[in-house]
Image: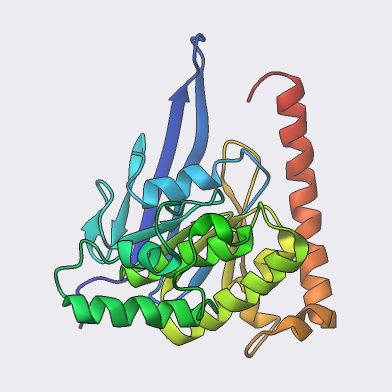
Length: 273
């Protein structure tokens, strides 16, 4: 039995930056707290530049908080480690490696499995992301959407306890974006990994999330926590997006975020970003 109350706990977290060439201190995240249970799909939703990516990077150990704490599986997060896997918006695969070798790279530092098992794991995730048959293709010979599937497969293959995804579909066209959303839901059902997914796309958030944390314009505070399953019970598919409840929830959250986007634009005009 786990000796901690929650899989991930963020407690009274604040992050401040000193602006370049200015004496001003900017508060990016302001006293944010939340608790996440194992196996949840959590979405951080908010306007561009609000601080949601910074919060995710602090959870990943890539940045430090000014005050407050992040505790993962009972341990304070003090830096990056193998417990945390990250997928970014920009394609992060290695062009000199094949598709299979890129996925295998995620297993490079796993001493808990043999070379034979590494090959089996890599092929398992290759199949899960729908790239069977592309094993020997070099990355620059496949589409952007396929490259992002490789990045997702590589991150899952590394065996992290939590997956942190920073707008991973943001650079894709609508068709590829929707395809990968469905694939991610399928993989997540099979693997039951804990996921934190950052986006400013309301429809994407509602489609993917168990819970959505809606953030204000900077400094980021939690405006509302939405449990999507209260509105959309059961497994989701593309047909879910045609559901009346889906539209109602999307529109309600969009009304919340619209004002925050306006505030962000006003700060940009005033030179406060």
